[in-house]
Each structure stands twice: as structure tokens, then as C-alpha cells.
Image 1 (spheres, rainbow, N blue to C red):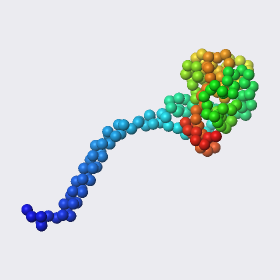
Image 2: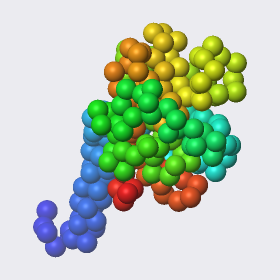
Image 3: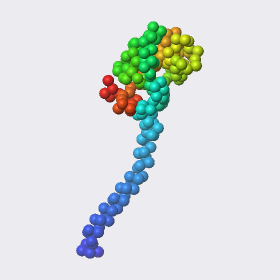
Image 4: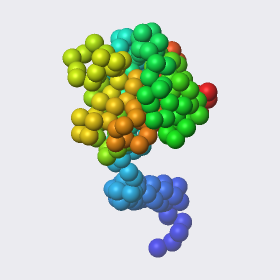
Length: 197
């Protein structure tokens, strides 16, 4: 057969089409293998920052979000709650948070960027239980001088509304403050703190 009767344009088209279809086939075949090595959505979310809308949190209310598999509490403190914090100082193990874990911008009397909002990991620093949120006016047997805070029923550890641990309880340190930042007046990002100070 002579090459004079061969349509070179058609040959190039068929070669290109075959290569293209083959490339698409290889991509489809490779996708499951490549996808297998990607972390699952759950694994990605476990370490990713969590965005929280704080606009609907009422005064005195606590909401819980999950970050890295841990409960993070956001408490909107009332003016009365904030005013009562200094009166606890003499009864606390670490009132200035010198031995506790928190970002530098939360090493202050309220342990917060904005005094009104406490952002704290809700895990007792003793054995990892999750304390309950007990307001001053809730029914409790924590004493007449209880001004509100967190009580761990497992072994009796108590923390004030800045997450600071009281003396004479098993918990060795204050509750941990995670990294966080404000995206706006109504949006909070837990797990990241660029520009938070």
C-alpha cells in the first residue's frame, strides 16, 4: 500500500483521540488509588479550625463546639460574672495563670481576648472528665460563696468563670484556653490565632 492514499490529517486526529481517551481512562483508574491516600473529611475536620457564630449566645449562656475531638466551651459572661472574678483570687491555685496553658493574649484576669466571652477547653485538668457549668443562681451544694463556674463531679475539682482552678481540689492547673481569634464581632475561629492580639 502506498502512502499517497493515506489521509494524514485523519491519522493525526485518530492518534490524538486515542491518546486523549487513554489519558482519561488512566485518570479514572488512578483516582481511587489517589483518593485512598487523602485523609477522610472527618480526619480533616478533626484538626481544622472551627468557625462559631456567637451572635445568638445569650448573657450567661454556654455553648459547646468540638475542636480536635475536644469540647470547647464559649461562655458569654454577664457584667456581674466579670465583676465577681477578682473576689475568687485568694481561693485559687493559680490566679494569674502562671502555670496554666493559654495563649499570651489570654494570660490576663479574664483569660480572654474580649472579657465578655470565655473560650476554654471543657476538659478537667485532673483526669480528663468534663465538668458541668454551674451558675451562681443554679441549685447546687457548692457553698454560699459560689459565684458560678465549672464543677467536675468525678473528683470534685472546681473552676471559676475564667477557668481558674480553686485550691484544695485534685485538678493541678487551670482549664486550657485554645488558640482562637475573632473574624468579626459575631464570628469566632477556634483553633487559629493569627492577629488575635
